[in-house]
Image (spheres, rainbow, N blue to C red):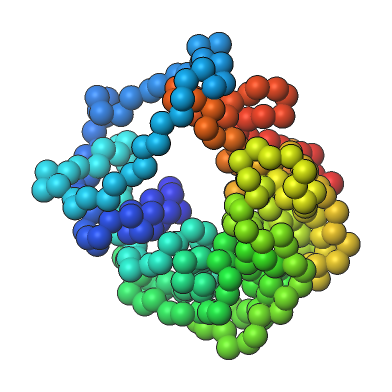
Length: 276
């Protein structure tokens, strides 16, 4: 629950100009918290309607704004003033590393008195190219840049890195730019997610719309899973040990459809593969 509150707090800080969250309401049977069930057979066919564009519009926080939370949950701003924060990694010392693709850097946040607010914000590493994925393995911090996997030396408690990032392997650049990184339990294999360049075009680089497997030094690369338009998050399922990923699938399928659904056995939102 602590990590969930931290994640929500960082998202909140990234999306509003004020560093003060609105009041929180946490009551049992809150009518504002509703359950919605959407069944596949109730959805229209793809392209049945024109897709509508409805991007978000940032406005100032209304004076009477309130966040409705389940009982037992709380929310607060952990850190603000970040540039497009996307991925977080908890360090062995309890600090939080945040990838900021817009600023091309990794920021370290420290909550020394454990009050839920990061009093210290330090530039851990800069000069990166849209960094996203973060992972520790051995004495290294691995970083997924838009065009390569790089790494810098890391020691527990370290607050900044002056070392030049070591480039391990190039990656297809552009398009969907997030490059996630995950290591297996033994630390001997690295998994890197690479999104497609387009929405649904064929004939792209086979290393795109895929999860790549390679050694920690970037060698021995092979395609571990393919047919994934834009895999973002990766994690190991604790019971069976399968690799799970969340995929941003095709959009533009119609005004009454979410971005893709199960049009065949491979199209959907969540995938899992046996660990190997």
